[in-house]
Amino acid sequence: MKNPLKTIRETKPLIHHITNWVTIYDCANITRVFGALPVMAHAPEECADMTGISSALVLNIGTLTSEIIDSMLISAAAANEKKIPVVLDAVGVGATKFRDEMAAKILGSVHIDIIKGNYSEIAKLAGENAETKGVEATSISADPEKVAKEFAKSSSSVVVMTGKEDIISDGSRTFIVKNGNELMGSIVGTGCMAASIIGSFASVNPDYCDAAKDALCYFGVAGELAAENSKGPGSFKVNLYDEVFDMSDEKVKDMMKVEER
Image (tube, rainbow, N blue to C red):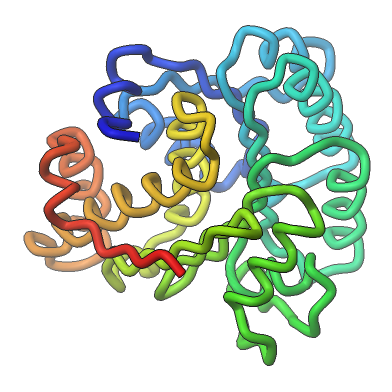
């Protein structure tokens, strides 16, 4: 897509989140600073109605409960019916049996358009040997690009693996995004924010593989620019929001580090 950020800011899509209580504030903020409109409606009594007026749905199982999973399924079914993109951030898959079972339940009950996680979370969902230390990635023995590509084929979804290099695949195309800065891993919430940004970009671009690639490039560029004027994690977080606010499609195009394989 030629100018995704301009399109988001002109159309102001509503992005419905059922997300992580730890990072919900950050997800709302980053969505708003990119130009979309965040809404967080978790109650089963209203979540389908909220999805019905939204342009994308972002699900994050970081602080899951059985009740929240029920709301996710209700909202995802509504999103499938409306044919708007559904993003699942599989936070912490591989850490507990309950988390693994609930992620499998979501994937088995509704269609997820974009499945996001770190290397070990995606590897676990794909049936590879992998463990997650809390919500942090551990090493995996399988080739991550192959895992992303094969899992995308088997799930009929776009698969996003985040890490030092981000891998995005729809089963036929695979992008490697090399934008970003190590300070992005020094604060809680950047992974969850990435899912919100992916949802925002997918809401205006029906090519979800391209949308996810762009989202991670733009976020990574913002991280690089923010790091230039940051003394540590605290100032970095403030600067990250400011760099996104000051961002343009033209600025990002000159800084994108992405390969297609």
